[in-house]
Length: 419
Length: 179
Image 1 (cartoon, chains in turn green, purple):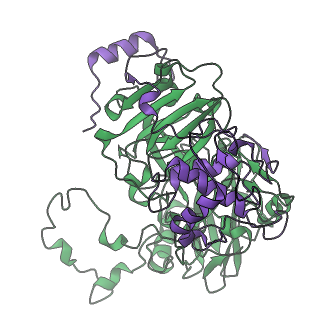
Image 2 (tube, rainbow over the protein chains, first blue to last red):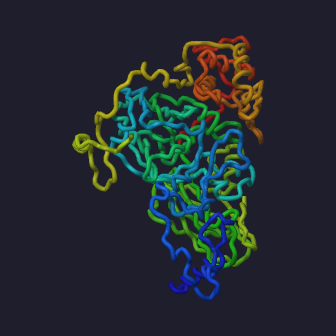
Image 3 (tube, rainbow over the protein chains, first blue to last red):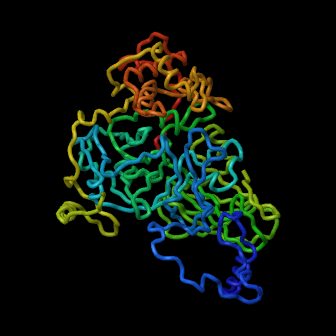
């Protein structure tokens, strides 16, 4: 296809076919630019071109356009008595970075209000020197910034039993990706002197749940970060302000927020959050425990559930792929429900334990279709179909659902959950 | 205010004792740089509340299901039900077999360690006032939940010695994966 033809086709597509998202601002507004004029054949000068615009720093901390007001996190519907999480509007995101105001939340006792001047981190247990650090101490250490995804291990859990969610946000929205800045935990542990007998660490939050998880020292000495900033600014309160642990690729709850204490020991503590919760029940009645790393997974976000294709023609199928167990090597897309697969383009840079944006050109012929994506990581793991996942693990495991998400496209262009 | 001001002295010492690898976007120091203050275990005892599966960390104090029932009705029943049958918060009692199509995970059917009941209750319960119970109250609440699950008798005294000896029905129900 020539460039000129492609541009022309794309413009036609933008004008005619892109009311997806039902007003959620899915890709672009579909309003025909020519409709602004009295005579639809000629462009008039728009009113905003003929006046001075509003002033600077209005407000001082900038906000999204008012036309994007529907791009927000949502609670489950109906909301449970004790709220557990809010979900990221994946279908409205571009690139791989989740804006700080849209990062999903999972709290175990709400969001504590912590003055950073009063926050302390204690490291003790099997160390030569138990130490206490202020936030001023922590930001003095050598820092680094890394782009990592964060996914709740309960993401997409409800789908295991039956189709429940309607949108990418509802089904997969316990997923976000930020540039996280902080200090390698291994650097700070040098101040304390780790004793050789230390095999596990307990990380504890300062929230009302004093949330705790046991983490192997091998991970703590590898790529674990003490994070104080996300996407260029200090952590949001709901992300653990002023300090959180970050364990790249691991289930989200282990990256303890509002981190106040790390204790080194010889064995796991068997806390509530690694026994009663965040363990994966098998059909035998036994539960897998310490299933830390998130499995290879992907989801198409454009177009996706509750959007509508207004006409046949060209669409860019796009979404996210990620793995806690290796680099994303390949993403394949099917438009016929998994009968045939073709390779999608990965947006560079492709980073380890980050979301990866994939894109796939699709010419919709107007017939019913089933869109699917499957990711393959550097460990060789292939994202499974729901059928093969359930066959392997039953329907009770709840956590770590990484099954392929099908989106059904009806002849009228309406897109629904194809689970 | 938290400010990212690094005194020249610190930068110098990090550069001198640290290693800077070519082709790497970060460097790591090879030893302590002297940031932070030492602290004693005694100074952090109010934060040091974790309990190990063998009972390590359990404090002095004790309680039975008899005293626990009174506490439970006052502090726990409104969310967990008067017999721990569950309400707006999780069911704590019963549940039965786990190898069914709709398993019910409770303290009695699923939790592998008795020590976790003490640890979690002390750090996170009651929901409207975490870390407000005395150690005697936490022992009593733990005893009552164990009693409701028919794991201990009503008059069994739970303390730092006896609680870790209570063997939970699902003690062998977990397969550690560590991956």
